[in-house]
Every structure is written in C-alpha cells, then in structure tokens.
Image 1 (cartoon, one colour):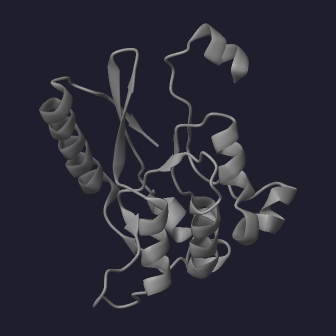
Image 2: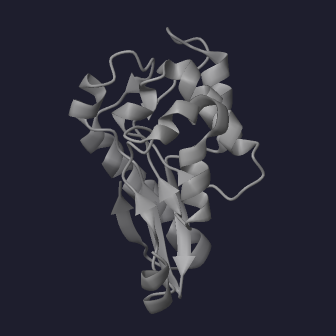
Length: 171
C-alpha cells in the first residue's frame, strides 16, 4: 500500500467488505474493532459491510461500530446503501444498532476529492450476501434500484457542491 501511495498519492484505497472474519483479529471484533482500526492506520478511505460483519449478530456489529467510533483513531468511512437497520416504528427496530450506525457515521455514500478528482463511493449488499446473513436483523432493499438512486443522489450532490461530475465507485 505504501509503495502504491508513493507512486499514486491521489489514489483512493477501499475495501469491499467481509473485513471481520478470516484472521485472529476476529476474536476481538466486538471489543476492540481491530479490523477497522488497522484499516484506518493503513490509510483505507472507505469500506462496506459483507455478510461476515453480521456473524456476531446485530448487537455484535453495534458493539464493534461503537468501539471503532470511540477509539480516537482514524477509521475508514463505512458506506452501505441497501442493507440497513429497521427504523423506529418498523418491525425489528433495535435502538442500539441504529444508534451505532449513526455514531460511527455509516452513510449510503461518501464523496472524496483527490488531486482535483471527485469520487462518489457507495456500498451495496448483494442478494447472496443477504442470504448468507440470515440473522443480521437488517432491512434488505433491491440492489439495482438502490444503486441507481444512490448514484443519482451522489452525482447531484457532487455537481451542486463542487461543480464536478464524480467518478463513481461501487463496493
């Protein structure tokens, strides 16, 4: 990563999700948020959720998000547009999970500027990922429809705020 950043200092570094499993770091997922903290230290700009972020159920994800948000270290943006906690009044609403998403700052998309180029980065949860996270507690919205709405919103925001068309990146 450092070699590539030296060569291309304006590049963005992103992760496509499932950052929470596959190493011993997962043993401290809910209590130390090591994955997100390491990604921040390595210079990652953004990531999204994969099905493995839900292996510790919604409460485990909430604990990890709150831990990462409160660590005082740089952590990457988390973008997720179509796999979200139920809102207050909806079936399955969990205040702890919704507050953790807000506390961390999980967004549909983020706009990042590098070297005069704007990047609109958003996250989409796929059908298969939803099938692989049966206990997530999240609401799943159609990936295609949500992607189009998200791209339209990100482009409009970028044009309005910066007068530029963004490069769109889907995680």
